Image (cartoon, rainbow, N blue to C red; front, top):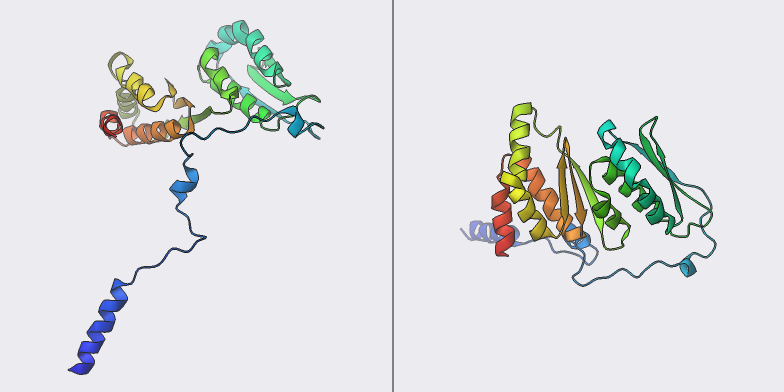
Length: 223
């Protein structure tokens, strides 16, 4: 009897034990969350006076219907990227945009911002919004939704559900997340602060899983 009691006691003690977190183990969500009020110090030429050693370049294709708009706003694109010493070129024959660093480029991250800029322009984001990606506190997320739903008719219905009647659902999502959101074809382009982009991606992915976006928006507005 005594042995069985001690056996039960040991089993209860073993089940009640929980693994303790060590100092090195940190929750992933804490690493991915940007602290409130955090502002990245601006990167200046004094931080990298000698510039870059190698040339870096990126290119992306754009659909035919974007040709007229890109041709019209391209001088503004060149001017905005020129301030970061990034060279931009538009090829109307091949239907492509490309960006590359120059000898005067000192910020190594500028070319990545330029890459995101031409990607957003190719996905029907207007220049006035896309140019914000050159700011330090703005990021972008291009969410591919075309392969998330197999049935085409069902996909179109869920995409329309994300937009809402007269764009009301999308507008509510933009106001709550402080992000600009563009639904075009098989992609959703979002532009704004890091925390807002996480919320936008969650709502978009849930909508494609047949969870109405209004539920996520309601929860977000109550918190």
